[in-house]
Image: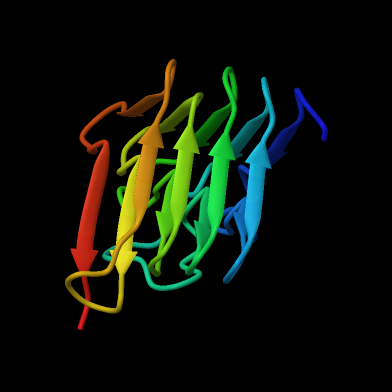
Length: 145
């Protein structure tokens, strides 16, 4: 495991609106103590689609993401549809002991495309912070049909 590393999508140029981390189904992601994952997205509007690129970390279904203490996942761009974490499917678990935040969007956006009754879980553990800095919200859930 690598600690105190920074993973980042570019803050300028053609790739500025790519996700810093994107994966599909059945994955496990550990953000180690003191690490940072950041995205500086500046483009795109409206409700994000799967692999919408504006998000810092995006994944589909049956994944586990763990953010250790003193680690940060940050959507630092000025796009209101840029989330720090965007689970697009179901059966996901987010274990947070660090900080999940968005400058202008939502910290965690549950973009569930399979309808009501589907589950995702957020365990905000001791020391965990979920925040939106300006105009966004901590967590938001939508259903698309």
